[in-house]
Image 1 (cartoon, each protein chain N blue to C red):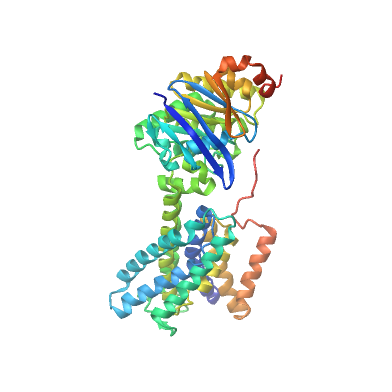
Image 2 (tube, each protein chain N blue to C red):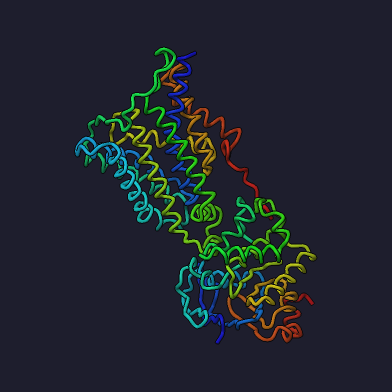
Length: 295
Length: 236
């Protein structure tokens, strides 16, 4: 029983990381109506920035995280400006999707060029060793607890921002109708830039937590978590902020439990199998809205 | 000086020319109707005025200032608001949130609250439903919300695109009464309508748009009596 609890908590922690990444995916999709497949690579870039500040420059974890947040925000906004915005009016939505895949390869190969292909050993951002409960039978790592808390704080902050602030309301307006939003005086380009900035800053945070829990860093570190988080966002209902959270947590728990109790080789297959089943039953995801038109 | 003056406006969708050089003006305090059949270019005209479309050539003067190149999101703060075709309320936001977005361009909180009061007084049903999602409103209520949302910016001129579309005859009368009241409160109105009879009945002047060009213009009362207009647009 205690070991089950242990695995459940690990699952929650991994799920919280997926959730933070998925929040970035889902906000960008919801507002700019595009899938930023390079989002996972923003995580990797953020992690390398932290690695550089902490290990190469001996700068400390917190400054490292702050520099990473700034770098990722700049990369996110710049990518949107030079690679995605010119294609926003393109005849096919595939144009921007393919560009995003191109950006993903570009960033991976850039990291390969700059940092090399060898695995870097990441110094965890969280130094707290954690809690030991039930006479040492239940150990919860510090990074696990911090990850879960951070994801909850981010969720609450984002929900408050979107529902209570002027800029947040502008985002929802742009998400629903860009033309009508323009008529309200909302600068659609600026709103989309802000969305990319927030999503990319979250990617830096996710990178710090991911590499603290699994401390080996390569140029491909972000790729698989990026895809898993995309699955989480779809599972929860893409475009929905609470949906990304629920999707991320479900995915993390299922992944850890199936790794433990079924097969570690099959766990990814199980995760994607669940996605297929959920989409067959509820094509819009767990919290996705039913699409209805009013005449 | 006209409040709004359009000179030789040409607009293209790719290679297709939607507006072939139209000119018209709206004076302060007028209701001007722009009538014409489907595809004549009425909505294109309003989209271009609000900066959602860029013209190939021509000029738009507002209060004597050339606003042809001003980006769309800066138009509403200059005093020109639009009630778009098909209402286009934000369906997942509440009525109150929709109205607040209407005042997005305004910085003064007290003025925004005053506009809320004005709009709720004009549309009591919106007040009753202020916490309801806009997508759950009836068509008539959505039209009122779209009008209220445009009024939240306290515009000098309001552009209305087919406000009567898809509404029952009783609601159409109600909407036209509201347009008249909004005008009496001091707002200039540029009204685009397929319901030419209703539009000409409340307008001071009117322009008839035919496949991208203005074919007829004049006093609304004269056009109502014009034989060819009656045949083409009033179904007589």
